[in-house]
Image (cartoon, rainbow, N blue to C red; front, side, top):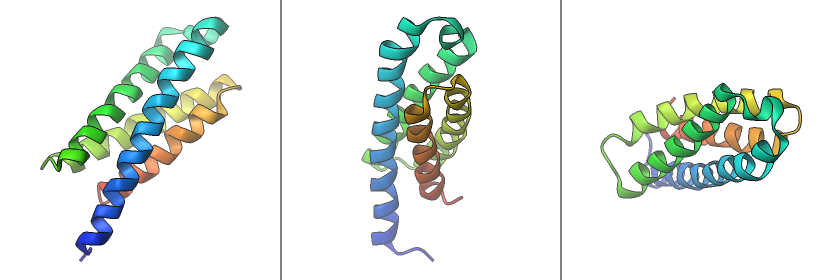
Amino acid sequence: MEHKHEANGHLEACIKACLECMTSCTHHLAHHCLPAGGKHVEAAHVILMLDCAEICALCANFATRGSAQHKAACRLCATVCEACATSCAGQGDMEDCADACRRCAEACGVAAGK
């Protein structure tokens, strides 16, 4: 059984990673993808980046307030972040964003008890 302190540490890491990922996706979309155009603004990629930023904000909020649903939010966040990491890595020049997504997926997976 996980100790309360350890669980709190996992939640804190999840919250931090979510906020960093949300910021990274939002920043890269506005300041890299939109100006770059081409494959960076293809609908599937843009929608995934927006979804990732939004689920990260939701997950951070759920975890911050101790919602009974935070583990479900963390599981979904991990899934979306993994997909976004793959999409960003596929762009060829968005490795920073892909790395933030991967870190968030890992932290959320741990917080969800995966």
